[in-house]
Length: 493
Image (cartoon, rainbow, N blue to C red; front, side, top):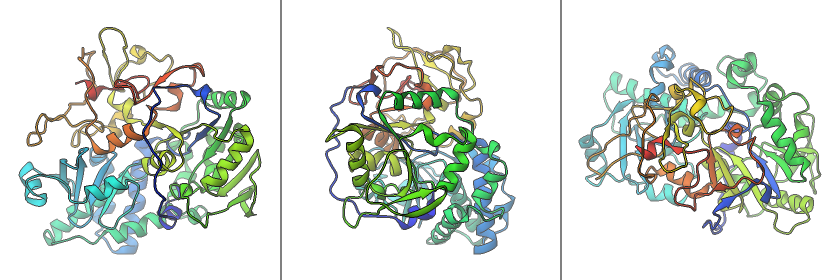
């Protein structure tokens, strides 16, 4: 998490390694090292409560400290939750939010929260409807910019709504300006609200204060089967590590609640405040690992040791540790994470790891789970779980309310036979089983990045904890592979 640290620690990266994958099947037992991200990967949040809390924190800071209109404080997030979707891009100068295709075509757009017509999009961006900054983003999808921002994780999405509401309010009060300049205030608020140094500050506009007061409202306990699954990896002599951007105090808060005070025993090593994606940079000087004594940094270390907890650090020194642990020159690493910017892209492109992406949108949209002669569709969360091919998995009833968007459509695909006529996939979470005739191509930009850099994708860790370590997961290199336990329903409608 740790937005304050991330905003400071932005590095240039060396030339990327070859990301072309020849892997057709992935088996957990084939990997020497297994790593886990924390937030939205090992730790699952109650998003229906988390979103309104984050929105309220931002509204308070913007109104009280940056002079924004008091109507932000009066907003009911319930009225705007349908606006949230991962992978949307904010054009900070125009006040527009864009859903992009794989080629930069603007599949859908809004000005503030108000949806734009196709004519309004062409008037703003030209007849081709190609976003002008697309090539910049495509070449480096993990960069930050003062003219655009991709909202790609669940801490981000309430901030997207705040930005859209600022545009709405500005237009209503003053008329539509030639350009908007609220983005520096959003950055100020991000750094203030999520700054690790604010962990012990008791103010209601602070994220950590609100979460500490009622952690069970925002964080889910970890299922025992996930805990036992990770312990079993360690027992089979695989090196298991936790690599998170969250500082040690926040990590402790989450893990003590979700697992218990002995949680570090699950891992061979824990790295907090990693500063991903900068953690994977290759140029000198590299940031040293610092040993942790409780929740206190006690200084940089020259050599990493087993069963220790560290902060900061870099991929090069971690690799040396993993080589020592496995007695291999090139240990195979599989990493579980959720963020393209922090986990997926840098660990694959610069770390040469394989990645399993945890993508809750699979669960909320529903999945194709039948693999016999006739594919069939598994409903989203409103449906009874018995039709799932994975046993004892509870599909959460509230997820579709915060992860599905009627305004934006599917995360994975925007069905269009020609680019001047956009036809949405209808996702209402209430379909019966439907026969299909194959899987569509992912055609959203952010969905395509998931497909390009992931080995395979799962909705949550507990979808795979009871499988054999020898279970063969089909990778994205296969035409119908990449999703487990089934591909998103939107790709079959």
